[in-house]
Image 1 (cartoon, rainbow, N blue to C red):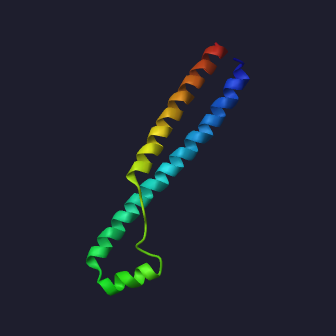
Image 2: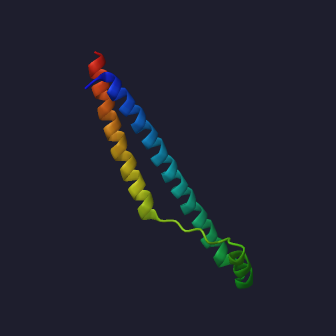
Image 3: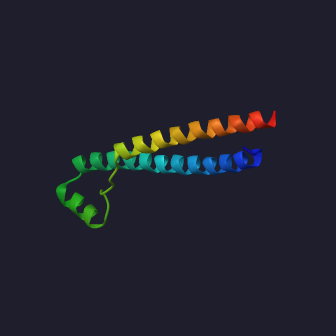
Length: 93
């Protein structure tokens, strides 16, 4: 394998890892927001909750399974990235 090909692939993997990390962080944020909204629902009156829902609030959906899948995918990409970078370092030596 040519080192330039490995370097290009390593860059592509870094971009993929960054995108997966950003998606995972957005999912974590949705989970936190959904927890806040659940707590608010229990303490606000039903008419207020109804009004807020009518405004499109208190409707955040979050999925822990999706977060786990994103984290697993990120871990796999990072392992591949480490392998490619090790091959790149070995080719440079």
